[in-house]
Length: 255
Image (cartoon, rainbow, N blue to C red; front, side, top):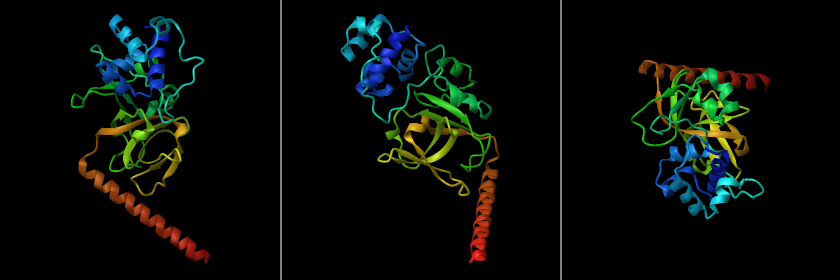
């Protein structure tokens, strides 16, 4: 598909202030199909191109040939994240790509590169409803009872304003890499407070403009015996108590 058409579709959608899901609903097509059009994976039929021209109120020739994203002021909402790169199966359904811990560095630098996304391993979970998903391997023990090596399956978040306080998400940034945290959304300050469920880790703020992608938790795959999670939580709490006691002794010793 022409990159001009795909970029024009993405530009005009964002200019109208619509999410991919909102526009897909208006068109009566799956969101994954629209994302495919915007990433130039798939080409809409002639009827579809005519519909795009009509719904965006643009000339057909302009849609096909003109770089509409250049020289125009974008009215994209300030909390709108970038257009998502996805891969689709033979039935035009979104794949669930798996980002393993060893692939984290590559992903943060190429998350919006369709050719890179196509190379990622894939999962198939028939229980999930239609949507756009990605799977991430957990690093560390900051979100107990999930352990290192567990996999979280998440749905794509298009707008930062869609994040509700207490929601657990995978956050992708250039500086921090990929982290899985519980989030408090301060929309007025345009920052996210990222919290760990493991109390030994301190929360920290992340400005909106440093966020590359956000994925909301939907399910997880664990490779540990269920009872071991409780022991891990218990051990973490004992370490926190020991740390607090040590800090108190240090303060008393200085007084």
